[in-house]
Structure formats: C-alpha cells, structure tokens
Length: 330
Image 1 (cartoon, rainbow, N blue to C red):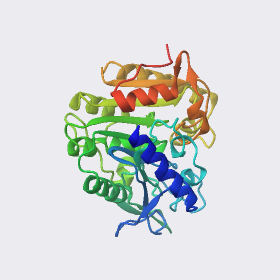
Image 2 (image 1 turned 135 degrees about the vertical axis):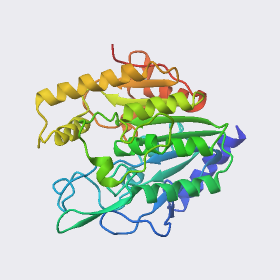
Image 3 (image 1 turned 90 degrees about the vertical axis):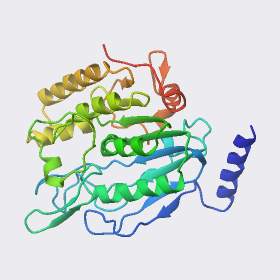
Image 4 (image 1 turned 180 degrees about the vertical axis):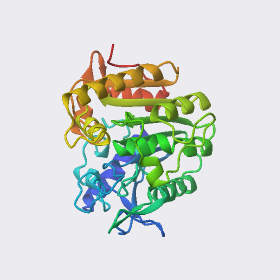
C-alpha cells in the first residue's frame, strides 16, 4: 500500500509541474535514424525492480521502392507519438494499466529494419541508414547499467517493435539470469515469403541461439528461445485478419494492395504458426477477432475480451506470473 501511495504521489507531482506522463529523454552518442537525423530513447521512471522494455513499431523497407524518400512504409525520424497520445500501456496514470508503476523504457524506431540493421545502403541515388541494431543496443546497455537487478522484466513491442522484442530477447535473457522474464510480440507474427531479403539487405543482427540457421523465421526464433530458456514466458497477440501485417505480406509478394487470396493465405499461415508454437509449454497467445493492427498503444487494451478472458487479465498474468492461457483460435 505504501509503494502504491508513493507512485501515485510521484505521478501527481509530475502533473502539477506540467510534465504530463513523465518521460526522460536519453540521446546516446553514435546513434542515428534512417535519414541521418539523431536517435534517442525515453525512460519513464518507476519501480526499478519491474522493468518494461518496449520497442516501437513503424513499418520496414528493403528495396528502392519501399525505402524511397517519399515512401510511407517506414518511419524516418524519431517520433514518440505513443507517448504523446498516452493511450494503452502509455497511459502511465491509469492504475488499470498492467504496467502501472513499472519503469518503462521506450525504444523508438526510425531505421526501417525491425531494430536489427547494421548497414547503410545506397538504393541508387539515396542512402538509408539501417542502423537499428546500434540504436537498440545503446538502449539495452543503458537498461543493463541502470537496472542491474530487476525482479521482473517484460519485453514487448507493437508491429516492427514486436520483432525487435523477439530479435533482442536472447540478449536480455542472457544478461538477466534468474529473473522472471516474459517476451510478448504485439501484431508481429512474422508471416513472410521465403525469399524475403530483409535480413540480408540490413545485415541484420539475429539472435544467438542453438540450432538457428543463418536466416531463421520468426517462428523458428520463438521456438529456439522457448527451448533455450524454459523458465521464461513467450507470447504473441494478433487479430485474425490484421490488415497491416497482411499489407506487408502483400508487398513481399509484389502486390501494391493485397488480394483477398493473400489475406486468406496470411490468416491460414498465421494460425498455423501459433498452433505450431503452442507445442512449447512456455508459449502462449491471444488471438482476437477483426483486422485491427496492434493493441498495446490503443484504448481498446482496457476493454478487449475474447470469450471469458480479458486482455488486461491476460497481460497481467503474463507479466506477474510468467504464464497466461491460450485465447482464441480453433
């Protein structure tokens, strides 16, 4: 009760000073966005024993068409819009927030490479700095220095941020030994074409896990993580017909707008992936109806319910207990 009162007092003082939901800006040297502008990340202080590491989403690009300066498939500068809107998990004042009182580290995304790129690419007349790995590592090293002994860590992200969460989970898990850790991708199932060139184009930093090949799928990474770290929890959230994931799957297939056949193909592959990963005891999922993309930054986080299980209860159980039921699907 004393801890709760202290946190409420902290946030009340922040509001009184005109700060709103309180975020500290950190700008590490040597970091960069896709257009060459500076990169930075944000920290909202809370309980140092409970740390939320949150990778921002924002599309991706991998060729001259998708990476063009006028392209809208990826973010080119730091834009912490989620913090300004303060919805979903970014509503730091709501005691209904599953991460109320936690330290929240927000890792912005502006490199078009799912947070793992290590290349600056000339696409014929213009360059894109795919340096997401450098940026993400700078944020993680800050976390490791400033929060050396947490009790609980929750690693997540929406869309491209969901891939950042799973691609960097091995680094977090290997650093925080004997800590209760859950990794949850929001709208980031990784359904892709076999010839998708992203990792090669970006010179991606990929997880270092036993049995992984040179270009593993997201499903293979989740499986390797679950098997390598059996005491950790791994999870995915998605809607059944996520419009944005289907859109990017269509782009991989060369479709400017995804066909109905592509949407159906994505949906079948998405559910097959969840079913396959459910063979791992420490993997769970929340499959919601509809086509909405992402849930973490949305007000629906507080109202969504599938069957008898609310998303809030599911997230709380995953964060606090390291386990949650499988929800939705066949």
